[in-house]
Amino acid sequence: MRTPCLLAIICWTVWGLVAVTAEAAEPAGAEPAAANTADLLQRIERLEQALRTQNATQTQALSQENTALRKRLRQLEGEMQTLRTDLASQRADANKPDPEVEKLRAIVETLQSDLRLKDGRMPVLSKLDLELYGYVKLDASYDTHETTTGNFALFTLPEDARTRDNEFNITARQTRLGLRIKGPDVEGVKTSGVIEGDFYGAGGASENRSTFRMRHAYLQLDWPEERFTVLAGQTWDLISPLNPNTLNFTILWDCGNIGHRRPQLRATKNVWLNAQKTVDLTLQAAVSRTIDRASITQTDTGADSGQPTIQGRTALTFPFIDDRPATVGVWGHWGREEYDVDAAGHAETFDTWSAGMDVAVPVADWLTVKAEIWSGEALDTYFGGIGQGIDLGRLDGLGACGGWLAAAITPWKKWTFNIGAGVDALDESDVTVAGTRTMNRSVFGNVIYAINEQTSVGVEISHWVTEYQGRGTGDALRLQSSLIYKF
Image 1 (cartoon, helix red, strand yellow):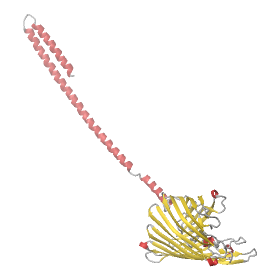
Image 2 (image 1 turned 45 degrees about the vertical axis):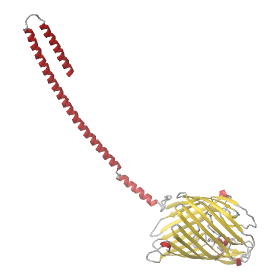
Image 3 (image 1 turned 180 degrees about the vertical axis):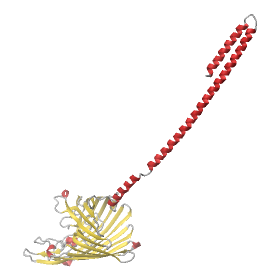
Image 4 (image 1 turned 120 degrees about the horizontal axis):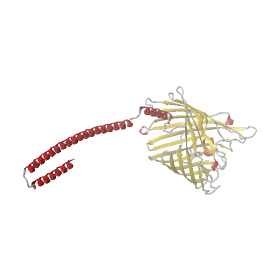
């Protein structure tokens, strides 16, 4: 606005000067020139006054506009702060748990807790609490001399039959599948059951077509308040309750470790012997089937006896080294067998019995020692007497004695070392038949590494020596490796 005004002033000034100059050039009188000069000065003053008025008006307008803009800016800043505050509040609310969501989450966690097993695994869902368990195991072994049966070792064959007959075996037959069943619990009684099997069943057409067999099938009634349990079905014998930790499937059977699985009805009662509840007495009794060999008439000599076998065990658990609980038990069984000697039904009867002791001592957090010793007669179906129960020359039971000792060493979290030895020996005065196995002994050592909680790999080396009546001795060195996946 100021530029046009200045131009106007300049134009008026120039025009005025031209007029003054023209009037000055006139030859007559000076009065018109003076009048023109005064008039020009008045015009200049009026122009200056108009310019000042215009500048004041423009300045006032600019000031008012500036004030309005500042007011609008402050308003916008206030709105921006309000938006920031609302956004922060929304973010804070988003981080807060929704009560309804939390309620649903609590319900789900409660259901999962009710279903979850003690070790954290989720069971198979059904009306009852079912847990599928087991493992897949591959065993590969090399024997410097033939063993029975190759996939596992019970004893070695005499070398006079096959001299240094080495062999290699690989199998997955120890793969195991089981089902644990729990509930319902009624009026203080807990009910449960187990069904378990592996693939070492008889009758498989070949190694890659193994048959499934029953290992365990029992139900259990438990009265926790009374510390009393009843078990009905097939499971481990009461006698010889411990086992060494071997990769070899047969856990020193026929070589110092006796006891197997059979149908039974069992009762167990536990009693605290002190107020601190650190000394525990266990009383057990069972009635089981007498399972044994077939006689010449192909009848089961145990069933043919017409009576069951009685088993019993008493054990005491008490604080020992550094108050770690050690257990000492004594046990035994008695039954009778009837062996038919001809088709007319003439038979010989003899007893099957055992008496033994088991000891388990946790010496340190990283060392546990276990052992069993026993003596008995006609123990073939209990894996005693090196798998022999009667002497066919006398038609009477074969006496035997034996035992085993093993230590489990866990110096590091994922590593376990096991060493042990076992021996099973017949009473040679009972032996009249040539070729009878009279003594079987073995020493073993293994290392097992846990790749993770479910998967482990192990290597085991063992030495086996088997003596025979009137024949050569069998001697074998066995190297075995195993890969195990538990579920």
